Length: 276
Image 1 (tube, rainbow, N blue to C red):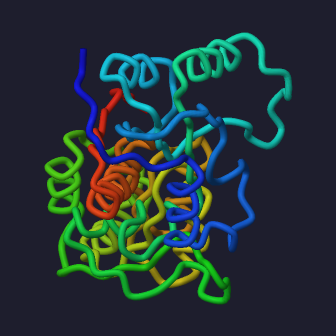
Image 2 (cartoon, helix red, strand yellow):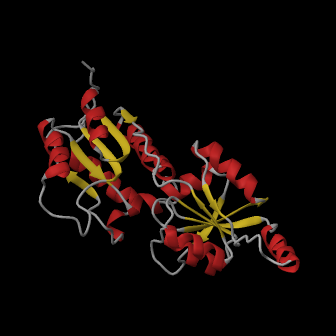
């Protein structure tokens, strides 16, 4: 049996702290931020992870955690409301073991210090200089700068930081049937160095058009759609799909570290591997 720490907090106290720190109420989100399932008991040990999947719940049960904090929680807009099937199984396990579930989505993406974008930029050696949508009061995507580098150098940096090779879509379509003059022009365009980068973690591939409009040389996100390839080529911007999960590990991990320091409770980050 795992020995629990003496310090305890309530789910409500923990949620209030996170709500205030992340300015959660300022965001119009796709799911509720904050306390999603109240386990009904004091919190002595916390588990953090990217997504509240059953494997993460089982890991929390194994170390006798009283709360799970994630980036991807439950009750998304448009999903069926009944708590049955897979969702029912997850919620039932939480309730049976008295585990509270707390989730923060867009507020955790956007936070300028511990947010997913901020932490990814830090890991890649990028300096955030502004917002992809500068007129929004709480923008999610960012613009960053880096030392001028070619795509191979950026791929190497991403691979080292995230422990996976990103899918790179070059800014221009390469066709072996091009004329010599067109090939010369294409090679010149492809030799441009990357200095200004748009960045938004997770499933934000469609922000590539805004990144191009803001003068970015490249755009980094997590996922890729079929249309993203054509957008990159036609907009003339390099795209790097680095993995939804991989780009969103560090925000929730950093939030857990902050909570551990503030409340003096043990917090364990558990990474449930996900290739997507």
